[in-house]
Amino acid sequence: MNAFRFRLERVLKFRQTQLELEENRFRQQAAQISRLDQERAEAWAEGFHVEHEVRRWRDLAGKDLAALDAFRLAVRARARRMAERRVELVRLLAEQEARMLEARRRERLLERLRGRRLAEWVVAWDREMEAFASEAFLARWRRS
Image (cartoon, rainbow, N blue to C red):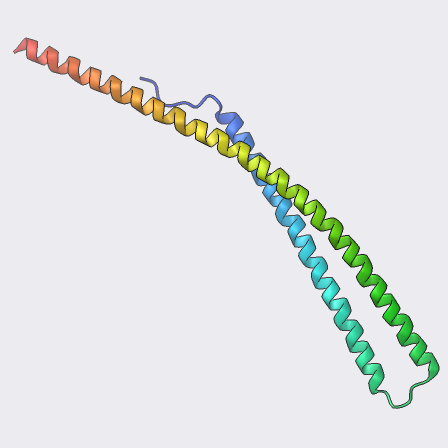
């Protein structure tokens, strides 16, 4: 009997490669969200630090307070843009997760099919070996 050969092996390899690609894209997008969260936290921390430092000054002029207010507005605007970007990135991440799960489903489907084919091949192999052993036994028995 021939060795086991899965006819869709190339398709399975393609599906595995596709799944790896989708998983990598998912990880990259998740990392992008993480980086954005880190940037956002750093921006807020910087804003609080600057405000704290300015409040410690003894001689505050009106222009200093105006500059602090402009800085606060800039920090808030930047944080708002980052929040909007985060919402967009989370939406894209959800879409990527759906693509990744679909790729995983397709790959597992072929893996299960390969497993079934292998099990069928093993059963056929066992039957053939049993038939061969029976024939060999009968041939030896007839000779004796």
